[in-house]
Image (cartoon, rainbow, N blue to C red; front, side):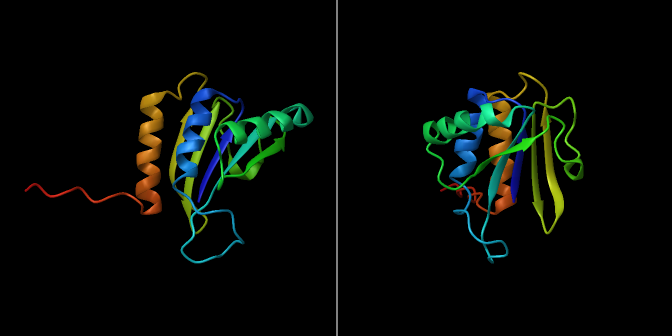
Length: 135
């Protein structure tokens, strides 16, 4: 499972979600063996204004497998312990245990950070390709 908490929509975040969307299974009932999932939670104090923007993001990024959701409250749900200073938090977990955790302040989610997250996701999800042997 990959979960992203975000406080703003940015081109970098859209790029990240688009890349992760290609690595995960289509949304399906919980507990389906062998499936991998991702979802994005946008933290906001104005959920009514954000809803239409998320539809645009999903269409622009051509998302098929990753739902974009809204949490009413900029702090986020207390169970997730999202850093108050993070603009974007990425958690990857297995069996309710967080295995990988990234947090980025405003402007820190850049091309290099996205590449690191995607590589970590491939490893976490078991989709990482084996290196080719030298001939």
